[in-house]
Image (cartoon, rainbow, N blue to C red; front, top):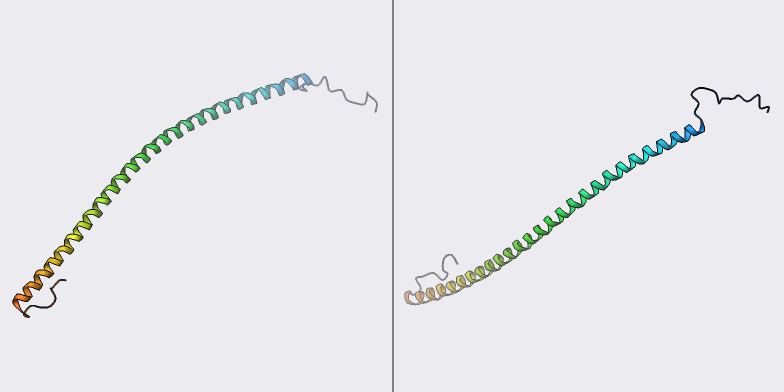
Length: 122
């Protein structure tokens, strides 16, 4: 192809030179780097905030676990006391029932057969 047949566009208005294109590309890359730096800084701040929140929540969780253990210990002590009182009451009731049965048997011996064989309510 003859070099005279190729259209020379170097003198056209608005056509950037290679140097202008490189400068433009560099500016675009600089802007992108600045934007990414800003986003990175914000992400780091967000992460730091999340770490602080996690530390506060972990501290609160530990406090609540300690309170839960204290309440469980108190509940266990109350349950033990309840069981002891229930067993003592049942023992006392059984002893009183035996005493009532014994006294009823004696009364029946003294009164004769006029009393029923079974005490009402037992």
